Length: 190
Ligand code: AP5
Ligand code: MG
Image 1 (cartoon, rainbow, N blue to C red):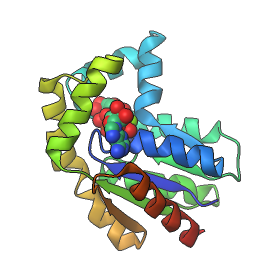
Image 2: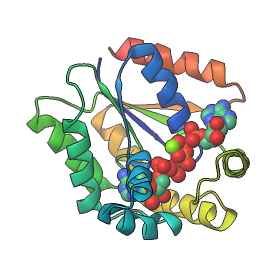
Image 3: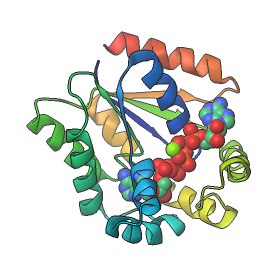
């Protein structure tokens, strides 16, 4: 299996679709958000640093994030393909990922971009706040996360376009239909 980078705004479904893809194709999965929330839960030094950024909807500094990503990647079994969920989020992270993978004889595979309107994103995240109580799912922090996404992460889509691996999927109201299109893309690219 080729690697997959799943890319999109907060609430676009990166985690939800990653879970489905992992179950179908038996791939590895790295969610940098989940890694950081795990560190916070365990009260580690990294968790203490990360909490300040996450609670404010800001990105963790690139150097720290790149180091965490490489360590997590190296801890996974090889040869199954990995879904990168929530990474990269800046050009520096994208360049670092490309380099890290090429040093290991691997590449980025394909990028899957999820495009969802902001009203739907907000409704999903406010609903998740009730269901799961994630600390950054409050309206003030969600708005900051949207802003950070637009300013720092969305411009990366063009970077992937230049790499020739961008595949865009726009939300049309049905999860199953979107998932079928994503599977067709994965099959075509493998
Ligand atoms: P992260 O955990 O990555 O959060 P995010 O990007 O804000 O995205 P979410 O996890 O909120 O949404 P998602 O796209 O996974 O959607 P989901 O599937 O859950 O990052 C959190 C923070 O960590 C960042 O703000 C930053 O501080 C830090 N961080 C992480 N990575 C970093 C990096 N690389 N560099 C620097 N800092 C980093 O879906 C959302 C909800 O919608 C769910 O409840 C789902 O059930 C629901 N839903 C309803 N209908 C649908 C549908 N049709 N499709 C999908 N989901 C649906
Ligand atoms: Mg997520």
